[in-house]
Image 1 (tube, rainbow, N blue to C red):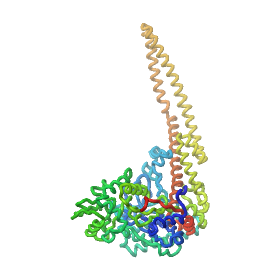
Image 2: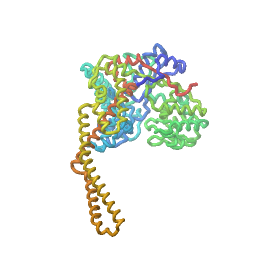
Image 3: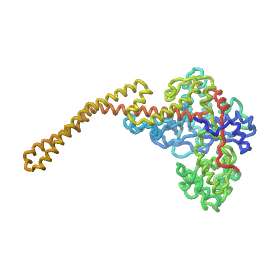
Image 4: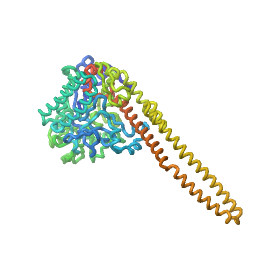
Length: 640
């Protein structure tokens, strides 16, 4: 929630950029047009007066893989449409889901997953509650950890497929179901009839536009659709025709690799990995940068692996392996080329690729290397919280520099939006809040300008609640906290809990104490008899019967003591205590979920809102975001 300390006005950031990278175009690259990528258009509020000749390219990252299903069991809420599944993201069944090209979030929604470690951090006992749930542990965990208001498309076919090769005719019905979830669900949050009608009309028009495009161009890909719609969506946000300095591209164009493009600066990093003089240093720097992360080191792919993939049209995408004798591409069906001579630079690689597969292949960097490839020529524009790999990319570049490998990269331009603060600039719309926000704001419906005024305070309150829940360990303390926050229901349960504990103490405790005292008395008498026998052995026959009687009485008392806590009445009391404690723990989990979705969800959507939300509520909201934009330059490494 706190603004980044390095943020400044776009004017200052763009002035600095003119000094550092005066001729480099801005590049906004993303997998989908239905999330936050179009928000970067806010820069056009500033560019015409500060840097009017700088080009800005909006691109579709169409060489990325389309998500695949990694589970056979569909979670509740999933929807199957043809060869695709519309999935929620949780920390159970769909924990491994990664969906980017086919994702959407309703207003206020995001891919904010309340993970099991998060619940544990705030005192939640998920396993204890889950084992007593009638719906089953798996279903309970799926529901508890599901990201609110988010859905992602995944291929049911496990074969990896890049977005540029996902047929539009196949994905169109699933995409429409995705849009229906996101758009229609958001429209229903508008409580004002007129505002809801306008929003529904816009949403339906967008869905119709996509359906008509898919019907007219069945042989296009999903990426083709995104490229076609991108300018239309940006013009809607901009309020008219875009300036001539705005252009559109895609990674299949930017990174097309052949003998004519191999000499472009964007492939200089590839050359460094191929050149015998620098290859070892590059490999070491890369492996060190991905150590202790889910990203594979190069040796995991095989001998000669490079941190780049080659996309071969109609064949697939796969890691490049280059040895002195072979070039291998790890596509679904690996491609192997026997080399007539070692490949020592990027131009020789381009000759081999083009002679074997033609001039339309695409050479794309993996997660760590893609940004520095393109940052040689472009200034990447990222939103706050965007691209989690950049820290490792910077580490990689620092190690390269330390090894004497020269790599030139431009800084990144980070944008920070006043998303929820700026909501008050739009015409007031009554919003039907989702349940977690309704609880946090203590209002089921709230005017948009009131939301803008209160959201920061509410986030702070929910963060405080999470900290408070983390400090509560005893069941009674938890019920006391719930009674303070929830009122009569938990006050009654707390009273019931205390009464059960008192009853247990009065019945089990009192009877157990009485039996314990009797047992102590019998043990004392037995010890005294044994002492007498030891002192006067001749009295053994006289005292032995009493000693045997004491042993029998002690055995009987011990048996009775063991049964004290197992009478039907006592078992019923204990069961009620366990039930109340479990209900309290389940309530704790619900409060943790609501508080986390509110605090983290609002911070996430504040940083990375879906651009189409602004068209549902009103362009005045977007204009206020653009006018109050903050920015900062983030160096990947020293340029020069």
